[in-house]
Image (cartoon, rainbow, N blue to C red; front, side):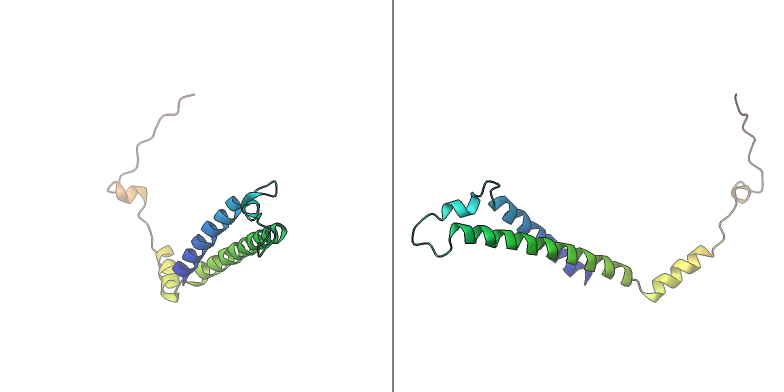
Length: 111
C-alpha cells in the first residue's frame, strides 16, 4: 500500500512541476498559443484551468503525503513491535566484561 502511495506522489509531483512550467507569470505561457479566433477555450479560460489544476495537484500532493505518513506508522506488525520490546530487554556486556574482567586503564587528564 505504501509503495503505491509513493508512486502516486511521484506522478503528482511530476505533473505539478510540468503544469507550473507551462504557466507564465505574465499571463502568457500555454494560454498565449491559443490566439486563433475560432478557439474552443479562451485565453482566460485556459489560465483558469491551469490555476485550478495547480491547486488541485498541490492539495492532492499534501493529502497523499499525509496518507503515506499514516500508512508508515500503522504498517508495523505486532510481531515487529514485540521484537523491538524484547530487544530493549537484552543486557549488554559492560566494558569490564569486554576486557576479560580487567578494568580499563586510567587516562591522565591534562590541564
